[in-house]
Amino acid sequence: MAEHTLREQGAGQAGRPTGRPAGPHGHGPGGRMAPGEKPKDLGGTVRKLLHYMGPYRVGLIVAVALAMASVLFSVVGPKVLGSATTEVIRGAQAAAAGTGSIDFGKISRILIDLLCIYLASAAASGAQSWIMTGVTQKIVYRMRGQIAQKIARVPLSYFDGGTMSKGDVLSRMTNDVDTLSQSLNQGLIQLVTSITQVVGVAVMMISISLPLAGVTFVTLPVSALVLGALIKRSQRYFRLQQQQLGAVNGRVEEDFSGQVVIQAFNRGERAVEHFERENDLLYESAWKSQFLSGLMQPLMNLVGNMGYVGVVVVGAGLAVTGAIQPGDIQSFIQYVKNFTQPITQLATVSNVLQQMAACAERVFEFLEAPEEEETAAIDPATGKPAEAIGRAKGAVDFDHVSFGYLPDKTIIHDFTADVRAGRTVAIVGPTGAGKTTLMKLLLRFYDVDAGTLFVDDHDVRDVEREDLRQNFAMVLQDAWLFKGTIRENIRFGRLDATDEEVEAAARYAHCEHFIKTLPGGYDFQLDEGATNVSQGQRQLLTIARAVLANRPILILDEATSNVDTRTEWRIQRAMDKLMAGRTSFVIAHRLSTIKHADAILVLRDGDIVEKGTHDELLAKGGFYAQLYQSQFEEVA
Image (cartoon, rainbow, N blue to C red; front, side, top):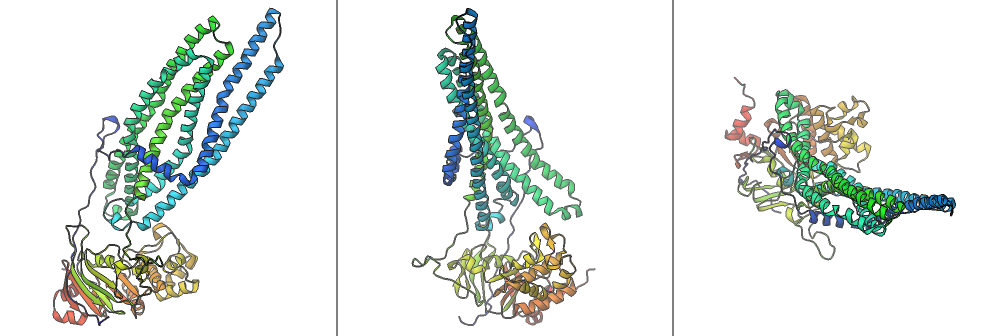
């Protein structure tokens, strides 16, 4: 590549309006409910779920077969018991007439058969429960894993653009998947067993008495009408309930992470007010969904009891005429109860299945979200990208780059800059000038709208993101550390690093002194958010992580903003050594930290207004000089 120079063009920054919709505060049926998203195709969601469960079809089929067998065994039981009752009555009548006696041997054999039938039913039910539990846990295990992988594949704009909050993603991974697991484990089998029991009991009732069966079947259309009406009205509220649960989780996560700021500004009441607003909407949707579903069981019991009264009246008349045996009457009464019970269970399970459908819809919606598209050309012979950077030398070229987060709001205007490998370029300017946006483009968190961005003469769109990003190390103003030991957090920069290399990186970044003062040293356990170390110490650890990564290109975004002056001096010395031989992009507001940069780009209102070295820019007496001098002026 020809010798690179810095060429002036422009960059811009535009803000995006943000905000939360207000909501009502009413409770119960009298409160207003914000219009929620219309329910999607229930049948389509069920088909997706059935297809998703395809790899586990053998276990599901076996579990369903065992559930049906368990029900069929239990359905046969009352008929067998009725034959024992009939045998007792016949024997008693024969004994009274002096023509015979009760055959206890036959009755004993009938009761032993009945015991075996019920034991077989219990065994089939237990085996079904064991298999179904295993299958559902495998399904949700796979689903959680896919959600976790999906988070890494969706573009950054998916979260930056407000498409979905972190709390909503967490809700889908936890609440929705857990509800789906319980619904599959309980609702699916309950649906199968209830239908099997209804069919089995219907067949047995018809075999005993067609008139009595007809009286019972009259209740079916009434039950269907009740179920259909309630399910249709409650489905939309179940979906809205899950959506609002995600919104509440997002609000809790946001308020928890910002608790220090909320208390410092005495905004606790405002935070509670915002939470209650979301909570009220959740209350309304949950209240309506649970109320409507709760109506199912009492209404179905009412319909079933009406049928039961009809059977008793007609059955009494048939018994008087001798059209039916006493034992058959006993069996039929049991079957009536067993017939209305699964219909009531169907009403209850419809609640569970609605929740399952609502949760599955939300999970599939996230799993089907658009992912970062790889634009690299694939070599058909190897199946790998035709271009690869490997370990870059570090040359970077912005060639007439334009970009905007929104189509009608351009932030970077025709930006051009060539950076030779191993050079340090500082980017300075007021907040909102587009400094960090340039780094997001360089890492392909976003792709340029126009122009081209090169790394070592490779258009970044012609290589895989993973191949590109393996050449970058970052130290950001907001230090990110995860729950784990200090050693594990530093090793995050290079996972195969030895303990000696981790400790050497810590010494290089001036971390070792404070690490040794902590209980356990390098094995000190950081809590969630690393709140048990200071903010400056967190930043030092992220710098050690970048040292250990040993990447050819560095991005330092306000890397020393959270440390004291003495530590900043130490870190600056370490950074000078770290940046030696590497291409470095330094975003800084403390202009004293970039005096030795090879070149400085000064951005204002989205344009490069000045470029040059620190001394050159001070000598010009322009905007950079004003920024530099303003940091040393006393505030009157």
